Length: 113
Image (cartoon, rainbow, N blue to C red; front, side, top):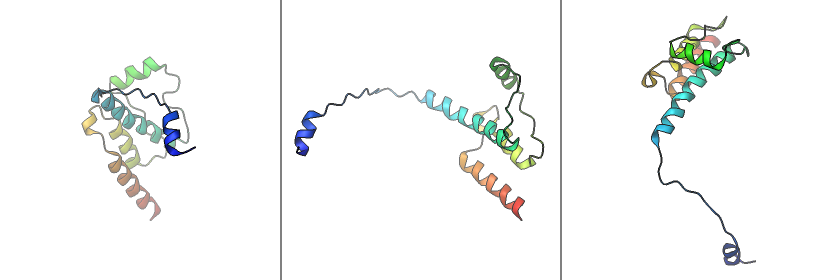
């Protein structure tokens, strides 16, 4: 079958939405940083489940009122500092991923030496 024959027999339906809502992107972008802070907490606590014993609504209420996960035992202060910056209530005050990578790299250098 030639290329032109294949093109004639191929039908693709694509649903394309012309309107893009930037608010949706910003919402998920902000959630990613909070989630990364929790992931870092899970790593530093050797896999403990965050917010153990709390229902989802309790966690939401705690976070909205300024509550944060406590520093895991043995977690270096600079790493916990990264976590708390990821949880900052103002999204503009949260670090970028490049800043997070830079700070973690610095922490690893300090620990290795």
